[in-house]
Structures are given as C-alpha cells and as structure tokens.
Image 1 (cartoon, rainbow, N blue to C red):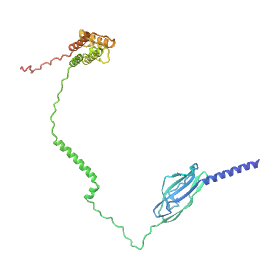
Image 2: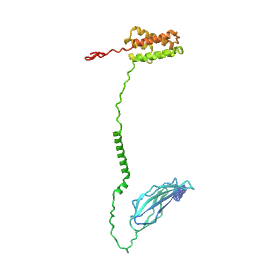
Image 3: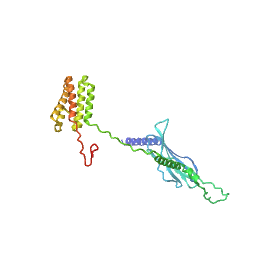
Image 4: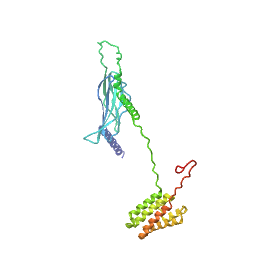
Length: 325
C-alpha cells in the first residue's frame, strides 16, 4: 500500500517537471543592441525580446538608472507586441530602452532575468564598446573663437517683422478712411416726422359695415354674412367699452355691458342683432331679406349712436377764436 502511494507521488512529480520544462521551452527571451559600438556620449537602443504563447505570463525585468555602473538608461520606450503569422497562439513582445555611456571602454551587461510561470528565464550577455573621440595631437591647440559681431539694421528688422508692419499700416489706413468719410459725407437734413391722425374706432367699424353691405353676401351665404357682421360689432365693442367679446356668448357680452353707459334702446338693438346672428349660425334660421337688411341697419345705427364724442377743449386766457382779439 505504501509502495503504491510512493509511486503515485513520484508520477505526479515527474509530470510537474515535464510540464515546467515544456513551459520553459515555449518561452524564449533574448537581449540585443542596436549598435554594439558607439562613441562616448552617443546613444543606442537595448532590446529585450520575449517569444511566448499568448497565455503565458512573463514579467520583464525592472532596469535601474544605470547598468553595470557605466551604462546609463536614458529612457524606457513603450513595449511592442507582434503575433506569429504562422501560429496565432504565439506572440513576441519587444521592450526597448535608450542607453548611453560617458566613459570609454568595453562593458559587459549581465543576463537579464525574466519571471514566468516556468521560473526565472535569463537572456544572453551583451557587450558594449564605448570609444573616445580621436584628437589629432600633431596640430596646435587654439583658444575658443570669440563670437562674431553681426550688424542688425532696419532692413533686417523689417524683414523679420513685415507682417506686423503690414497689419499696422492696414489699421491706420482704415482709421484714416473712416475719419475722411465722416468728414466729407453730406450732412443729412432733419427728417420731419409726420404723424398720421388715428382713425376713430366708429369710423373703422362703419367703413367695414359699408364694405360688407356692398358685397351683398347675404344673397350668397347668409351664415357667413351674419358671422362677419357680428365680428365687426364684437371688435367695435371690445375697443369702445373695453370688454372681452372674442370667444364669448351673446349673454356674456350683454352681461359685461350692463355696467357701461348704454341706453336700453341701444342695448335692445344690440341684443336683437346678436340673437339674430346666433339663430342663423347655430339654429340654421333662414331670415328674410328684410331681416338681413335690418341687421345691417341696426349695426350701423348702434355704432353711430354709441360713438365717442370728442369734447372741445376750453379756450385758455389770451386765446382767440377765428382771429378775434
């Protein structure tokens, strides 16, 4: 029994080792340089490349500001991912770094370590040769030359600022043009405003009634005739007595006019006129030609009898009538 258990554990261990070995073989890392030889102070790029399956987890190493103490990391660029065209389950991730060195010599960068599910995977070593700038010692050494004196005249300034000069000239020209126009333009003559006298409301109503009579509408459409007739009277009442007449019934209009200065005679004329129109419009009453003409006569008489009478203004002291003194 114990021997079987031991064999079972041994099989599990061998399977795990095989799995880890397979994962390790499926993940490959490498390091390479853009230039393996540079001049002192020049820059080159370090590439860390991982070839792996898309489901494998790999952690890139975190580089410090310097490598081996002499090689400095200037910047870390964004990682680039490319998929294998023949096998879509594999991908290649490339992380690049810009590096430089200010000390001449040959430097070896140790392997870079990547963390993965299969354990730590190391890259190859890299060698960077940093060369000094060759100086010809056979020639004499001269002092640094002094700055050259360059004259900067008006034409040079105008060449550098011609846009602003042009804009300034345009603005000045516009200002001068506006001043000249305002100075030379003809002086306008004062305009006399003629105020037309307002037409009294009763004149407006009488004119509309006479126009309606002239159309002889009741001979063609008696309903339309009485509708237009009462619309004219309602408009007159609204302006004359300041009461609401639109979209109101005859009873509401008569009730609103109870407190107005209208005699019973003219109130009865108005009531007869409005009631006749209601019978024609709503009860389909067919009035005689005499009734139609009577409604028009009642409307004209009501307007004429209830018109606003202008009272003459009193004569002030020192005034005169017809030139009399």
